[in-house]
Length: 460
Image (tube, rainbow, N blue to C red; front, side, top):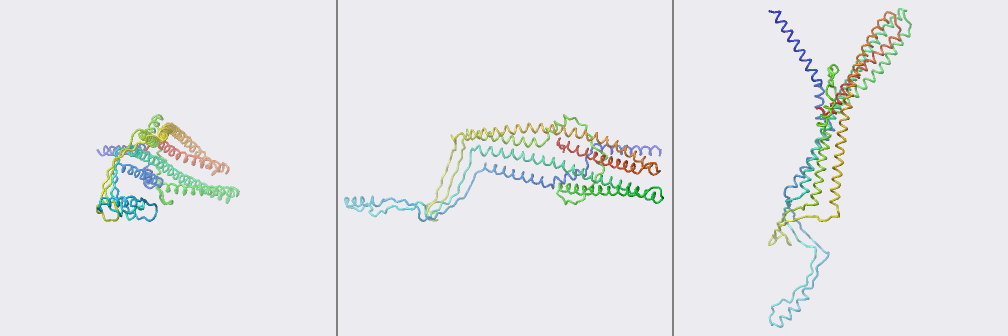
């Protein structure tokens, strides 16, 4: 019975390992990379600028929406004048003699004979106009279509932000892979340095035992110095890659980066159909959504100019307040109501030209949209075959490293037994070093090409 339970436990344990392996292969994306991508999307400065631009366009839309509401304004004015043109009319000189004659004929002082002449400033002095004005557009094509245009431009700007997000995902992923590659290169150089260090100590023993001459020691030390130079360059590349990665995340440039070593063990494979990937890209790429929003805005602009050429604008308004000399407000109240119609009948063919200009802009955007669709299909095709080539190159470099490693082990054994020359040892040791670096680059190249394909297809 215990034996049966033990077998069951082992089978369950093996099944669990299989499920874990399958889950790891089914989801090659790293949780660490996804965390860094989320941090970059939250903090990247370029993406913040796009969010601010969306905020600006949103406020433009709010301003266009506000034109649908009535406008109420309080407009008090007070005028003080001195000098300037005057209104002069000799009403007294004309009427006083006539009234005087009439009084003599009738024998009664019925008519005034001291009427003064008119001599008033045209600019009013000590005059106020204190009023509240209301205006409301009943029908205005500019307001309606400008609101639609701003709404469509906001949609295009939001698509633009998603374009930047897609590009940022790719940049963060590739920067992370480049950082891992620099770490891998340092590891390879350090391992090779250990091998050369052991060679140097072995050669020193051979010289001390009069089995070899001194040049084998100096040659080994020279190879170590060359490797130290390469290691210094690799460390410089590591710091540069780390700084660039942190720059994308808007962090301190020297902040440490978590390493996911599983990325080089479980490499992504492209099993998708090229045609399906192209269709997915055409449905998901936000560059097309951005151009689509701009195209709809241009089409709305055509309708706007056509409406302006055919349809008048209608508005109503009114004012109420006080108007007169001095701020007495006595017998100075007034009310004015207005209804207006604006219809430009002829403006020198300006409107016809604006309609044609808007149509040309629409045609240009449609042509641009077709061009971008073709460019996206080409980009997906190139990324697809780049990944395929990188995968084949990885297979070749793996085989090359296995052969180089086996050859080096053989030469190492022969050299220790005095059956091989130092130059042979150094040659095959350098071949193995080169093969290890090529394999490291090939692994990271597969990850970078996969990220490029995801960017081209707009995989989130």
